Image 1 (cartoon, one colour):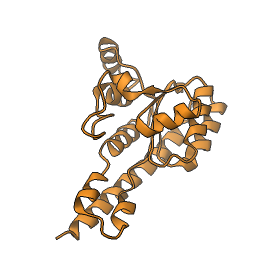
Image 2: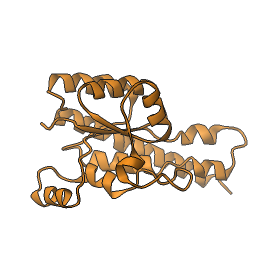
Image 3: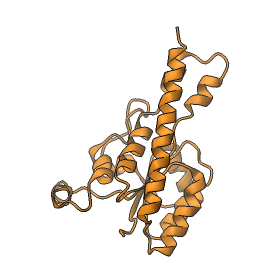
Image 4: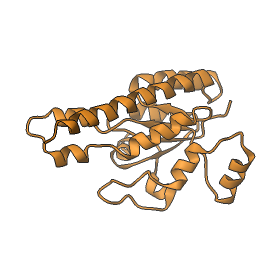
Length: 197
């Protein structure tokens, strides 16, 4: 099992995230984050590196583009057991991202508000979040993906029990949760748009 060394945390629901990040940091995990999540962690005393500093590319287009970058997605998606992948990571000076903690814009809550406009609804369709989650879940063999704050304690306890790593069984269970969530999320968008005249 590989030790978790770097985590990307970017959440809409910030409940428990500072304590989660503190526990990770206390085990030597480097934390990457964006926007409000990075501010919350910094305010909570957690050392954090902004994704823009990690990638060398600023957040842009009103935050629409921040994690959609090869330094992020290569770090998540590369296979740790494939020599060519390892060689490419080294050649391009790319670093692994071993844990991804993301939850999505509250699309359903947005469209449930009386009088919400189509433009408001569209702006609350998360793009980067589902992309990060699906990439991480696809590579569950190496990446721990956390989409639900209820799983924070489970991940920390497992890391404590396994010298900073999680088991393949846990990573697979968490990956399945991701695909169920992104399926439901896309379904909610589809249902909403189907009702727009």
